[in-house]
Length: 336
Image (tube, rainbow, N blue to C red; front, side, top):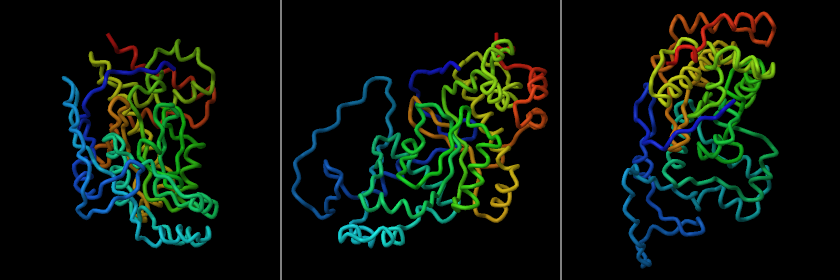
């Protein structure tokens, strides 16, 4: 599956109905300065060495407000416990949950990505005791179904630390019995509050699913199975001259399809109905580092044709399923 890349581009704020967290809001919330080693410096007025002004941006480069990541609260009960050498059990009990509701979980992901693409990621680390305390339990506030692409490291993109995210990765971020079972476990037993299907710029699996049938048939059976899970999303796409725009639309169409499949899962549907979780989509732009979030029904709704094609796909790579897939038109056949 050939990976595609494009030159960096300033992210669009509302393209395809996707919403992005305002970086300026993160910057305004951070009032403390970080020392070179990452430790908190008192906010009281102190004499400091002047910092040289940043060089002017190069021509054609994008200018974004740079968010400042606030340091951990040094006066918190958790910090005090770590300093006095508390046990793992004590540390585990003192750790506050990052999010208690779906809305809080989504805000935490947006804020983390804003720090990442703004160049001030916290890269959350833990003390030795905090790391050891992880063995007692895990309480990830979000589940992310993402692509296996090496350029999309989920915890880094969302700037989250150990134990914060339950990550499932598979080429094309497809929903099938294996990936769905992992998400079911997190929702049922780990009490996460949001499931995010994250596609990305330059996805090789989506690109391969748009190729003619004879090219797809050269792939191994398991790869063809994955492409078959993506094809209903891209088979009916209108051709565009702009290759980058075509690929973005294809990736987001696949995100919508996989979100739809996730919501059809009985365990997930029950958790949505009870208010425990929300299921949303996201598009990660490799060239900028920014994530666009698709949250509303209007942003995630499938067309009747997309629903029909999705219903005809088998959950397992059987010969009957492969034959049915070959009857679908290929997006690649529409390109001029």
